[in-house]
Amino acid sequence: MLSRANEPDVPATPPIRRISSQRLLAGERELVIQHMGSEYHLRLTRNGKLILTK
Image (cartoon, rainbow, N blue to C red; front, side):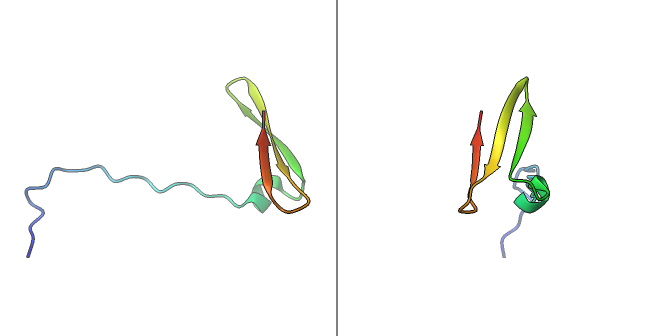
């Protein structure tokens, strides 16, 4: 049996937060994300794909 007693403590990686695109868009086809003074547009295409542009 292997012992973990001699292994260095490695901080646990927090889980990545997830949000559905439906919740994010809230029934709309586009939203604007403001990030560090810039605006990014997240658009839902007719084919159901997402496009992020600056």
